[in-house]
Length: 199
Image (tube, rainbow, N blue to C red; front, side, top):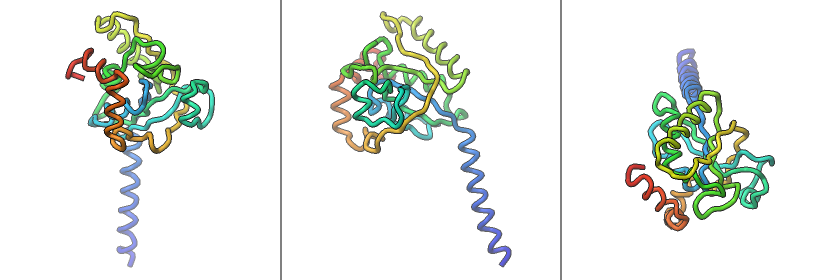
């Protein structure tokens, strides 16, 4: 009986240890790039990315709703919180994906979406992320890819509020509407024109 009891305990403990180890290895990156529907799939498809959550951050109200954020009065930006394994993908690689899916020169929002809630922001979680983000932004500015100044903000990460369930993986749940929105907003055309098929 002792052996029968002991084996399940070992299995459970091993499972807990594995989950704990994976959690300890993971890191978070938070980006605001306009509509979070469009910012989820570019990161979700990357090897080493464990999860991507759509949500709100950077504002002054607690537990904001989508309707409240849409008013532009909460200070929050639509954003995505990316949990990743740094052993498989690096923060600079995530930054590259971020830049290639936004217009970093637009002051008043992103594409057809106007308002502070659609601003572009890199929310850094530690000083190393801040350093890498600043280097990445400077390199992009010097690349000549854009004639206008890069206005994307780089600020400390604050509390992230996960958006309502229907916003999570919207591109899967409402594929046609997502496709029409991405094209109609001008985002898809801008990305194609700026980066070609290499994005």
